[in-house]
Image 1 (tube, rainbow, N blue to C red):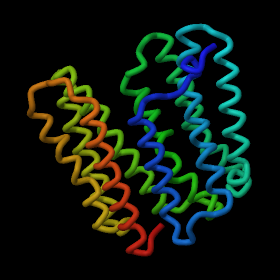
Image 2: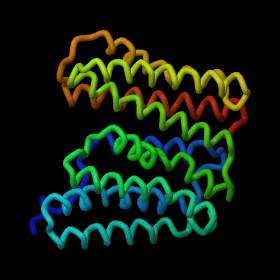
Image 3: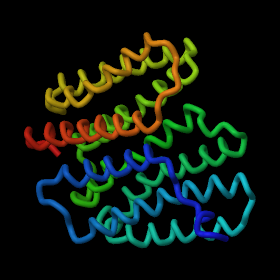
Length: 254
């Protein structure tokens, strides 16, 4: 097996979501980085890398790839142990539900060649954004409602790309309608959280980049420039993370 054959997730958009979610999770605490934080960050990255080995194994049936899956998973879990000990068994089990469901759904979708099914991508987004709440649990030893809301905000923000990309690529009316419904539900949820005083009104500004998604609903379908789109989405995601963290910290919430 050559170096290039080593399974490594080259989906830079997914890496950006993971890293942004980690940045949000760590930044929500004024106390700053703890001694276990660097190990947890590397552990999360290693666990994310199991995605490539699992999907490659399903396609090629190469048992050697299972070794990489085991190595990534074992090393990643080992590095997370200090943080998991702080979280406790109860919340660790709760945290594992979405990732385990994601693995099951993703494996099934790859097997039937439906890797890009919307339900699979929503599960994936739930897992990719989980570092937002993970670091809060490790820091506080229990869930904070406002942090959970920020996790949902992060999930909703990045999940908005699911229908947008399908809409731009295929131009089907069903995706245009789904995009409008999705943005409407997102707006209603954010408005409700602000009205209930759970989050700051400033948090609404973090979603302003999604106005482009609404504009795209009325455009003709076109294959996007992946490099340009990736750079733009990275800038937008960074702006979202900065504003959502600033909103939480400026109001004393996090």
